[in-house]
Amino acid sequence: MEPAWMSECWTYQLEDFLLFSPRVYWRMFELANAAFWPLHLLTLAAGLAIVLLVLRRPRRHGLWIALVLAALFAFVGWSLLWSRYAAINWAIAYVAPAFGLQALLLVIGGARGGLAFDRRDLAERLGLLIAVAGLVVYPLLPPLFGRPWASAEVFGIAPDPTAIAALGVLLAASGGLVPLLLAIPLLWLLLSGLTLHAMGDPQAWLPLLAAASTVAALTLRRIAR
Image (cartoon, rainbow, N blue to C red):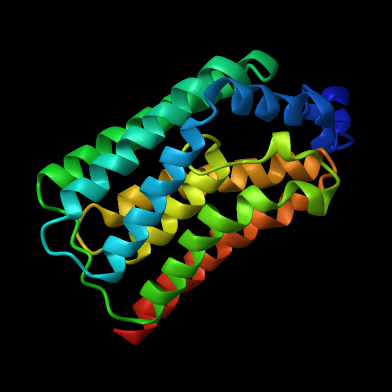
């Protein structure tokens, strides 16, 4: 006979672990946007510049792309996850350092010449589409889901579009560290998608779709070898 506590565990649903309301969650982005505006213009410009560089398949700009992405991951990890999200969800205090680790791995990969943007395959093209979705589509979502523009998630400011755009860029890269660099953004999008699902937010499918598309692109690349 199983213990009572074990039988009770099966009655819990994902939303039972939610520590905040949807209103508090989206208010977090509103406050962050108000605090950091107009930094959004700089982060978006940096993201678009990265995509343009990748399209040119640079041989010497891999380091600069890695450094810019590293700076943005470190900033998002500190300014939003650690300083704001952890205040409403204690578990994020253990997740935020992963963005710092991602920044460190990007610096190491770029400094050692471990990132080369020389891919010319279907996965690269899909990756660039994913990157553009993170850069352009995400800031336009609030009205579609009945939220004010002030809650927009912007690349380099919010974690989801930052992770999505980074995955897209990394799909266009080759190098020994690339599989490792994909892991943290993928895990974050899985966590974010499950959180939004627990909130009953229809936007939950977007981070999950981005993660699934990345895995599908990697699978296609492996099959094509």
